[in-house]
Image (tube, rainbow, N blue to C red; front, side, top):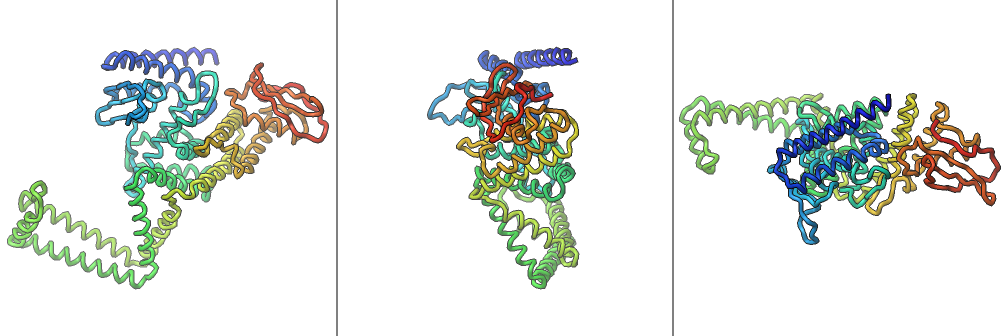
Length: 514
C-alpha cells in the first residue's frame, strides 16, 4: 500500500511540474526566470517530505504546489531578476501587487517569498473587529510567508539547518508558530482564505481553544494573539502606533466618565436633546422649499467644486440620511440611559481598557510577554498529550516538541531550548510524553532505571535527525562513565555522557521507536 502511495505522489508531483511548464508557456518571462521557477519547484519537491515530517503542521505538498501555480498563472505578470548591489534599494525582492510585478535576486528562496506575498490579501474581518484588520492581516500573512518558505530555507533534501538570518521577523515567527501548533495549520489557512466579513474567525479560534484547553487559557491565548498582532504591526507603522495610543487614551477617559454615573447620564441626556433639535431642524427644512433652497446654496458655497451638491433632490437625499443617523444616535443614547445599557457599556469599556493597558507599543517588555506565551503553550501541549490515546498522534508530539525547542527566541540566535526560564515546562512536557509513550508501547526501554532511561530518551529532543523512527541508541561504559550513542539507522548522529552514580542494567543497542 505504501509503495502505491509513493508512486501516486510521484505522479502528482510530475503533474504539477507539467502544469507549471504549461503556465509558463503563456507567460512572457525570460528563459532565466522560467528556469528559476522550475528550479524552485524542484527544491520544494525534493525537501517537502523532510519539511512535513519535521514541522508536522503543514499542508499537503500537492496543495502547496497548486497554491504557487495558481498565483503564478493568475497574478504574476512580470518577473525581473536583478543582480545584488550593495547600495540597491531592493531588499532581496520586492512585489508590486497592482501591476503583478516581482523584482528579485536570482534565488529560489527569494522568488518563493515574493510569489507567496503577491498572492496574499488583507483579511476579511467583522465590522466590530475592524481595528484589528490590518494588525491581524500583517501577522498572519507574514507568518504564513515565513512558514511556507521554510521548506527551501531550512531543508535541502537530506538535512535540517535553520538559517536564522533569512527569518524576516524572528519575534513574529515565534508567536506565529505557537498558534499554528496549537490550533493547526488548516485552521490558519481557512482564516486567510475566508472572503466573508460575516465569518468571525477570531471567535471560532477562541471556541476551539476553549474546548481544548478551558476558558482561562483560551482567553489568555486570544488576548496574547491580538496583543502581539497589534504591537508587531505598530513596530513598523507609526501611524498605527499613534492611532492605538489615542484609542487607549479615549477609552481610559470614557471609563473615568462612566465611573461618575450621574454626570455621565447628564451628558448623555444633553447629547440626546442636541440630536433631537437637529432632527427637528431637518424636518422643518424638508417641509419648506425656501429653507431647502437656502440650505442648498449655503452648503455649496462652502464646498469645493468636486463635492458640490448637484440638485435639491440630491440635498433631500443627504438630509434624510443625516436624519436617520441622528435617530440612530438617539437610540444609542436611550440604551445608555437605561440602567442595563449603562452597566453593559461600562463593562464593555472596562474590558477594552484592561486589554489596551496591556499593549506594549514601545516593545519594552517584549521578552517577558514572549516567555509568558511560551510557558502557556507548553502547558497546553501537556493537556494535549495527557488527553491523547492515538499512537500516531502521540508520535507527532515528539516532532512538535523537538521542532518547538529549536525555534529561535531572539535575534542573537538563542533557541527556546536554551532559555532557562522555560526549562521546567519543557521538562514537564517531555517527561509526560516519554511516560505515556512507554505505557502505550510506542518506545522501548533502554533500562528499567527511570532516571537514566529518561536522560537517554530525552536527548532525542536535541537531535536534528529528520526521521526519529530511525533512531538507534547504543550504550557503553568507558573509564567508569556511561555513554549513549545515537544512530540515524547506521550513521552516528551524536554521543552524550549520561550521568549516574550507580550501576544499572542496560540494553546494549535499542531501536527506540517500536
